[in-house]
Length: 115
Image 1 (cartoon, rainbow, N blue to C red):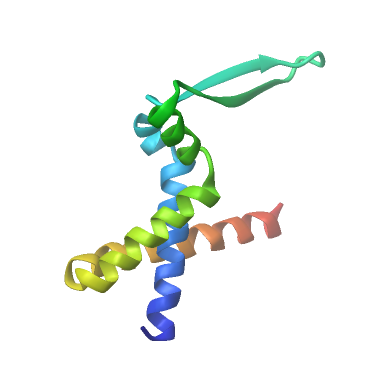
Image 2 (cartoon, rainbow, N blue to C red):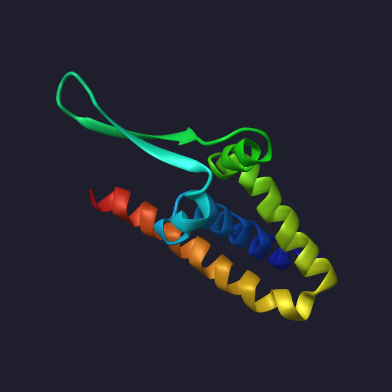
């Protein structure tokens, strides 16, 4: 693996992890494992937090999908295995996720600079 492919995998893994753990578009995947609880604080502000549903494997998956560190390991493992064993199939996915990952980082940086 050369440095360019490594960097592509890093950005792709970053984006796939964010997609799985945080993005609204994949909320349907987390719904069987998470319950969103809204709480009103004494000062009137509302906060949301995740409550893990169930026990056993259901709880384990819920915990996995609520932890970007945990999901990141599995995302990286999946993408690396695809890269190693099914490169032709994985290449478009890795490139698209890497572009989206870098774009997300740039958007965050530019947003912070402009605020």
